Length: 287
Image 1: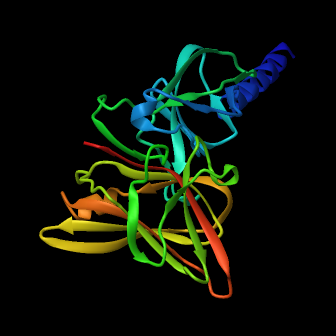
Image 2: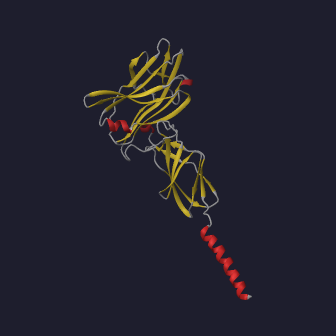
Image 3: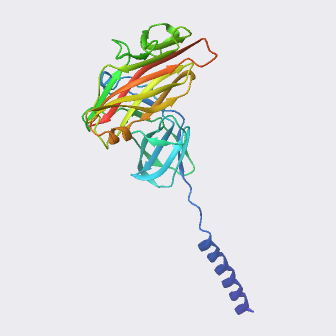
């Protein structure tokens, strides 16, 4: 009888041990909660406005990728003890939600914490633009506060400065393209030209608000020839929005070309007036 009992106990013990091997206890994460973030100035005179449209964070724990998380984010970290979270700002490339990317011109935010499984740790990342020399970055800014870097190219009208309170994004001035039946088209070009090197990150940033769709184009002088190329079209937006336009492919296609940038729009058929407002036009690239 004792032998039978021992066998039964052995079978039960073996069964539960096997179950634990097949179904081990699940690890419990510490959750890092990110409900908001900010962009702080480093050298404002160099990088210009800190307005942003950061939509995601790419999270690393002790330099191991955890994944990309849409904001607001709940990031699970399976760890014990002290460790460091590295966060990279994520954007929509070319304003498209399907093309999420790490923005290369913000510094990485780091956060040291003690893992505490089952707990939620709230954190507010603070991103900054990289300084101009670590590594070498060129910033070209037109915020329309001092002047207007755009001049007329074609069409009936061009971008002009405006200080009307309901037409300014930040600061005291923005730029306005006013279209109407008397002036139905407008095309403006930067007065200066730029030479971003090939195969290095290059972006255009801008804030805009518009009643009408408009195009960003480039005029490039390359190997003795001037070429006009469409960069992208932007849709009308009732409220101010921020967009990041990846320009790297153009600098690689026209290596060491001299680029100017164009903003072009036209009054839609059946419409008598429309306004396009632009602020904080930036060209940023690694040298």
